[in-house]
Length: 76
Image (tube, rainbow, N blue to C red):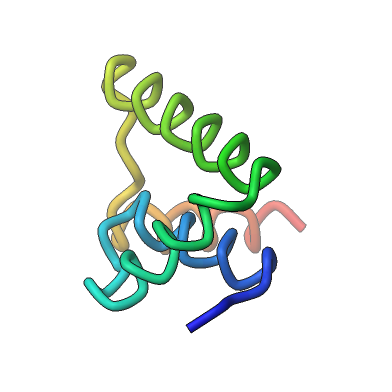
């Protein structure tokens, strides 16, 4: 059940995007209960997510990404 800090940070990132399973979240919470460094990382990650949400940031759609890629290719 014990996980490494590297795995904890990966789960923390997945959790930020709601891609972590309940089992991963449980493992992360246990890890955070004894790892001060990862608790700090998790806190900063949560703050970043909150700031992005409040700023109303959105991702590009797949169509917009493809158009941007084509535009860049044409300019080469």
